[in-house]
Each structure stands twice: as structure tokens, then as C-alpha cells.
Length: 332
Image (cartoon, rainbow, N blue to C red):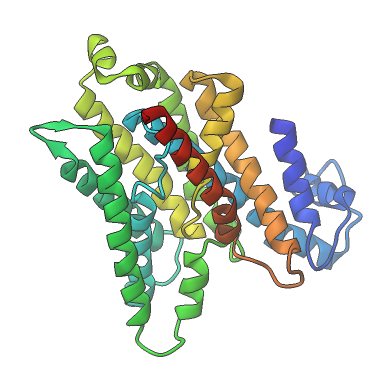
């Protein structure tokens, strides 16, 4: 899987309006990482295209896909519902509304700090609101969590649309925001990678260390409680971690849906339900999926390109309907 991810990144960097041979891509990367060991055969223009534009874009695609897949795997375990993912649950919408407010109300420009903080705040607020709405007599049921998440997602999406419409001047920043809302990696640079990569690494490590409790929650709250776990408190901490994962990547890539829904299911088909394997392999598979989808987004209508979020929706929506039909058969 790691080799497949590396190959996908190299192909992604090679692909574009100016095709560049993979061996030149490798030589530029090797020269930048190990400048004393090799000299590149690429031209200055090719070196700039590879290092300043395409490589950060491919790496950001991997980080975003990995973060969404890990968040989706955790949410599905917390609510024991195969239809849960950050998009359906309202977390992506919460991150989007505060990030768009930051952009359209002049609170801050597209900085590497302001927007991620706003997106995380929005994701966390949406998650906590969903958590409170789903409570009944002090208990939270998975079914109520899903319903509250879907309702919150619709509400926040309407707020986001209103913010875009009330932008101060016609066309001022609206096209940028609309492109960002559709999910895009086109504006990626090295400054976008640091915070999402750090959050992904730390969060995935923490979640893997807590995989035993996540495995117990997948069976039922009673099983987790029998291990001495405060289920309500643990579930709240997990929501905070997934909000952080989703918020920081939505801030740099926009709302990219269904990666967190599709990837964990595909991974469980191969490795089972043990989160010690599901979480790290979901991270690799999610990253691989988004890098491949980004390549397709640049090739389908070349020399123009599609927003990545449109293609993930085209893949994820039929999958969501298939899962919904499968769940309905199980309840019949």
C-alpha cells in the first residue's frame, strides 16, 4: 500500500499541462532532499513546476484523503452506523461555514493559521451541537446522532450559501469560495501541509493506541463500559479529535465528501474490523484514493480541471445509496 501511494504521488506530479517524465520528478525530489548525493537532469522550469506546484498538491491530496478516511472510520465505530462520515454527520459543514465566514466577512485572508482555526472551531461547535441534540434522558443513541447530524448539515449548508450570496461586491471572492466549497487542491502550496500533516500523524497515533476501546464500542456501549470506560466521555473526546482532523483539512481543501464513507468499508472487507489495522490502512487507502481522483480531475476535461469534490461525490453518492439499500434490507 505504501509503494502504491508513492507511485500515485509520482504519477500525479508527472501529470499536467506540461508532462514531465517520472525519472525527472524523482531526480528533483532526490536533489532537494539529498542535495549532496545527486544532481537533477530536469530544467529550471520543470524543477519549479515539480517542487513549487505539483508535489505540494499531491502530498496535500494524500493528507486530506487520509484524514477524512480516519475520521470516517472512527465515526462509524462511535455511532455503529455504516452511513456515518464527516460529511453526513455535519462536521464538514460546520468547518465550511466558519471558514467561508472568515473569507467573505473579511475576518482574515486565506492564511495558514486563521482559516484552519476557524474551520476547527466550526467543526467542533457543530459536533458538540449534534451531540447535545442527540441526547435523550442523558443518553445518546446512534440513530439520533445520525438524524441530528443530517439536520445540522442541511442547516449549516444553507448558512454557507447565504454567506456566499451576501459577499460585499458581485464576484468579489465568490468564485474562489465556490471553487473551494466544491473541494479543490489547485491552490496547494508547502505552507498548507504543516498543520494538517501534524494533526493527521498525532491523531492517528492516538486513535490506534485507543483501538481496543473503539473495537469494544463497535460491539456495544455495554461491552465498552465493562472494560471500565466512561462511554459518554470517551465518545465526546473522539468527536473532538475527528473535528480537529476534519476542520484542518477542510480549511485547506474545501469540503470533499464521501471519502470517509467509502474507504473504511473497503478496508474492512480486506482486514476485518480490528481498528489496529483499519485506522492506519484507511489512512493509506484514503490518501491513495484522493491522489488518484485528483489525477482524474485534471485529465477528464484537460486543459481545464474539475473540482476534486465533484468526482468524490460522483463515486460516493451511488455507494451511499447502495449502503442505504443494504441497511434497509438488514432492518426488514
